Amino acid sequence: MAEMFVTPKDRVEPLPGLGKNWGASLLWTLLMVICSLLLFSKGLSQGSPAQRVAAGATIIFLTGIFLWMMRSGETYRPRRVFYVALGFLFPVGFILELIAQRASMSISWEQMLLGNTPFCYLALPMMALPAVLSKTIIFPGSILPTPENHHAFGTMLALWFGATLILGRGWCSWGCFFGGIEEGFASLRRKPLWAKIDRRWTLFPWAVLSVVVVGTAISLAPFYCEWLCPFKTVTEFPAVTSLRTAVQFGIFTTLFAAIVVILPLLTKKRTQCSFFCPLGPIQSLTNKINIFELKTDPDRCVSCGLCEKACPFLAIDRGEGGLRQVNMYCSRCAACADVCPKGAVRFRIKGTPFTVNSSAPRMMFLLATWIFATMFGGSIIANSVAKILGHLF
Amino acid sequence: MTILFALAFPIKLLPIFLSVVKTLDLKIAPQFSGGEVDFVIDRGSHQIKVYHPVYPALFGQGSKGFVQLVWQPRSALPSQVQDSIDLNRDGTVDCEISFSNPPGEASAPVLTVNAKSLWVFPAHNSPTISLEGVLIERVGDAMFVRIPIRKMGSS
Image 1: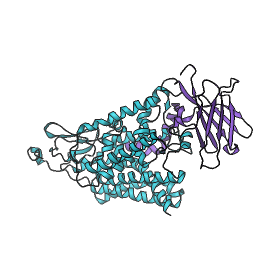
Image 2 (image 1 turned 180 degrees about the horizontal axis):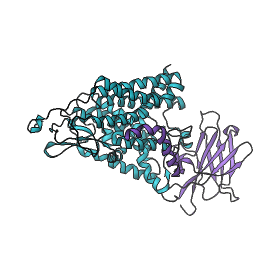
Image 3 (image 1 turned 90 degrees about the vertical axis):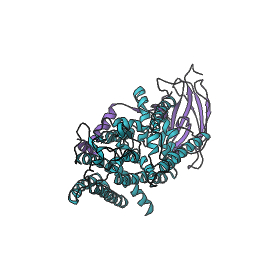
Image 4 (image 1 turned 90 degrees about the horizontal axis):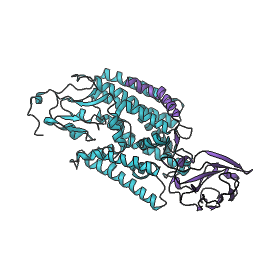
């Protein structure tokens, strides 16, 4: 805080807010409503009563979130409401589906032998080396979608690739439902109990990535899924019938409790995503090819450090003179942009100059991102709500 | 462009991407898929699909593996199945397999493999601790069995 009020930049006036007037907000929101209706048309017209209600409720929910973003000029808090809803509704819907199919959360060997295990995008990094070397996918699923398995390797690869082109590491704040779980816990406290975190922990996911890639190549099984995935706790896991499966279950639940629940609660940071997830480093690299970025205007930054405190991914570096800069781990959650008192941190299209008082880059990012979020997250929310309604009524 | 891409993705681009994936000719690793069917033994009331031997390895083939056999339909099988199988069609029986086929799902099937050839391991069913360790499993109206084998010349 001693860096404040000591440079001429301190006299930088804040930029006008990014919120739009009611007319513009409603027009942009109407565009998103039309997209939502197109994307949910099947659920609205051909689904069961529960599916129709769920689709309608999801459209209303998504519309409300987008209108909030347009009217207020905020991005982070509306996005968080959507993202936490996605994070908690996905496992509820998934577990209800498992109970309906098998009366159990245990992995079904029948499902694996038939190649019907849904492919999880977290397994993608482990698949690359064997796929290149032997043209095989080390996962008990299917390559292309089938009537029994819509979540084939090809489908998830396509979704991930599309999301990456649109969002870069924004996948980690707008797409990946697992992150929504820990973001929920990270938002419970107003202030962190544990604020000082060694930034070198952001390198640990690279070590995890190396271990799972090598482990998969050696064991010829998806190593992360078998031994390290904390989200097995809220999806499916091998039935505990031996010492090996007991150890596996112990690891899953311990990791979930520690890095998805407790550490986010104490630090208000996305600890699983920032310090463990092996997909994180890959997603960070994809920020290089994504056209959108959050960047600090050096002419406006007054080195107050609020962005650094707000960032859930420790993705803000402190440079010369205390100037803050967004680094490659940025997940485009826009916590930094929303908290910056001078509008120094803003969305930008790579290669274009900072234009004062322009919300165009943010709008373009939000339009592309929200279309994807509606398609991916929205469909998951609608599916889960439909299952809950079907269960209740 | 990015906005157009986001709009076009679910409608047009996803099917195109899946077509590209199809051309890559990727396969699910055989230790999970069981490999390809080699031949079918017709026993009248049921059939036995015998798969190609699988020797999982990152490069080439490993020294140990399995042969997957599928009895189908399970509903036509007796409560105790006994069969002698020539796994490689060289005219000699490689193993004698017997397994129980309990009705319903309450009891687990019990498998015994009596190896007759050096490249087949004798075995009895064990808890299904990993997919590679699966030896017998009911799958729909079929019974999946995996016979542990080794490459000749390996220990």
